[in-house]
Image (cartoon, rainbow, N blue to C red; front, side):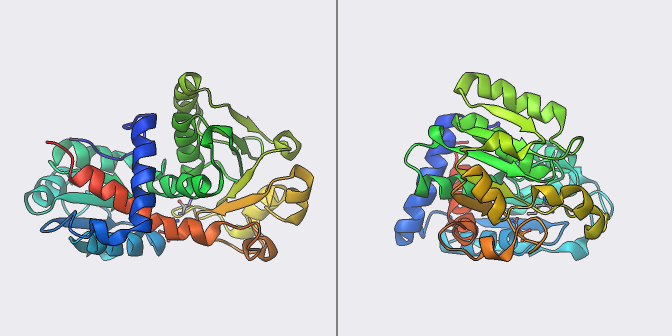
Length: 305
Ligand code: CP
Ligand code: NVA
């Protein structure tokens, strides 16, 4: 049984196949509208969501299946009953579990004790579905992903980790530009670096914006992730030098900007960049969540058992 928990479950060819399938689904959705006929997918959210919740629901419907949404009022898994029992019960009824959780271990337990594919819809450590949509968006704009250089600006978080891992799998360079002490988790960086050694991707961490001169794509995310109680004004004192704004693009020569959203305008990104259609790929990226996740659902739920 295969799952999508942190993307290391998939080879380079398999990731490329899923992105390619997503692009086909975007072009000719009607060809795929029975792929999940008769199947049900539980989408379970311990945290808030706009994009992930809506795109999974609509994605399952477009593939001919049925999505059952469990919202935050169900609380954190493991509190009312064990994650093991969540996994065993849900597996008796549905064909796949999409879960947004506080703790990555919850996903590991769901996949261990359940008997249906588990898809990580964001956890404290990773956001793999987002990054598949991100690289799909990059590949719509660049012919050769192995030549693309992406620079992530801001807090070392779940997005940072998934960009490093997926960039490494695809053989695409990723630089993390963060204040000292706020970069990625060292063990996850090392995991990505091991993969990168085989694929030829160059991964780096720096606190110096000048180090990413000549890069192609800027990526940023909130300075305060869900579950972190730091006031935004406090975070701004640390992260403001890494704001994605016109000066940063001029200084680095970067041409395109991505942001997973939700965005905090005038904090990690300025409105003039977010709204500049010559630069911002942000709403294409949000649209592609739908298509990329439909490819993930089809690949995992229709896998050979
Ligand atoms: N990018 C993303 O996952 O957005 P939501 O938190 O709204 O789902
Ligand atoms: N790092 C952010 C991503 C939101 C999609 C968070 O975890 O809140």
